[in-house]
Every structure is written in C-alpha cells, then in structure tokens.
Length: 288
Image 1 (cartoon, rainbow, N blue to C red):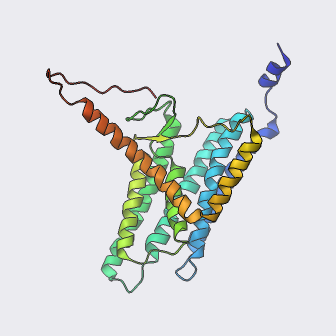
Image 2: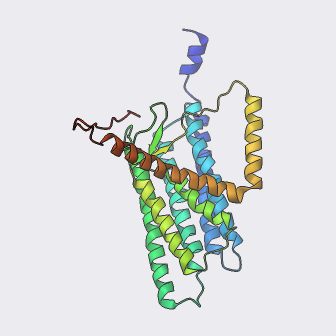
C-alpha cells in the first residue's frame, strides 16, 4: 500500500472535529444577533433591521462552509449534522420570521384604520409562523429522505434540491429588508405584498419542485490565483452594490424554481398533444 493511500485512510485528529462546529456556532451566533437586532429596532432606529438582515445574509456562507469543511477534513459526524439542522432552524427559521414580522407589520402606523391594522398584524403573525413551520418541515424532509427526486427533474448532469432550501428562503427576506436599508413597511398595500411574498417562499420550501444546488461546483482549481482574483472582484462588487445585487440574486433564485416548474409543465402538455394518428405521447422523465 502506498504512502498516499495511508494518508487517505488515516483517521482525522480529534481536534479537527471541532472545526466544522465552529462555523456552525458562527451560524447560530449570527441568528441570535439577528433576533436581538430585530427586537431592538423601531421606526426611529430602522438600521437595526438592516443589521439583522445582514447577519442572516452573512450566515448563509457559514452554513455552506461547515459541511464542505467536514467533508474535506473527513470529520463528518451525526452530531455535526444534528447541530447544523438546529442552527438552520434558529438562523434561517426563527430569526427571519421574527425579522419579517417586526419589519413588515409591527411598525405599521397607529394612524391607520385600527381594524385593518389589527387584521394585518394577525395575518402577518400567522404567515410568519407558517414560514417557520415550512422551514422546519423542509429541514426534516431533507434529513430523512435519501436521494430525493424532484417532481420536475432537470438535466442529469446537475444536482438539485427538492424544494427551496431554507437558507435561500431566509435570504429572500433578508435581501428585501436590506434593499430598503431597514426602513419598515408603513402602508397596508406594502404589508399585503409582504404577506404574499412570505407565503410564497414558505410554499416553495415544502414544494417538490427542483432548485439548483450548485453542488457540482468545487473549490479545487488548477489556477488558484485567478480564482482568488475572481472571488475578490465578486465580493467587491457585491459590497458596493449590495442593496440591488442581493435582491436580484435572492429573487432570481426564488423565481428559478417557478420558471423551472412552469417550463416542465409546458413541455409536458406539449408532449401530451394528440398526434394525427390519434396516439398521445407521454412525457419522459430524466433521472436526476
């Protein structure tokens, strides 16, 4: 047996197992910070809403790194998986639901029709709670289903999530809040749109539609210098135009699932159109 094989099969040191958990703890810390900022925010201090949104946004790469580091260092464990799921519920479930309610409904002006305001607060609380429940169910399904397949399969060379991932759903809420720099909703019409958006994101999480996972992208590259320059340029542009770019990225990913579902339904109906001889062609499903 070669020395390379020995290194590959050598078990990881015990201290290495804490490395992925550090990133998971960072995700939990960002969620706790976002909750605290959402509770401190007010109409006179809307910047706390923006801080909460940024904390949720920064937690998304942390959530992706802990799993990759665990696989790279061969330190994946059941404890790490459970801790990661709990962190996702806190940071991408509880924190964005509190932020969505506080930003979108709690700051409605008292001069509004009191009956309408009360109804908006009630419906908003229910929708935000449903967002949290949908996120928890999405995580439970992801943890218990082995090799789940979407109902509208895509390209065989790509990997897909079944339903919108909870970090992406939380990213939609955080991007909307950051786009307005934390300035809360003050009108009934905007609150109604906010209710519809939260409900749509919650539905997409528990749907069986496909969302691109990006798992085929690897960090290993033959030209690391060019890759670092590219990442640095992307981060710089993102920091300069974060309000617009984060909104475009978040909503673009959300609508990608809707477009994929609509395209699949359209092609399926086209294939079911009767031929001149009276036969009907059935759609073929690609394994993905």
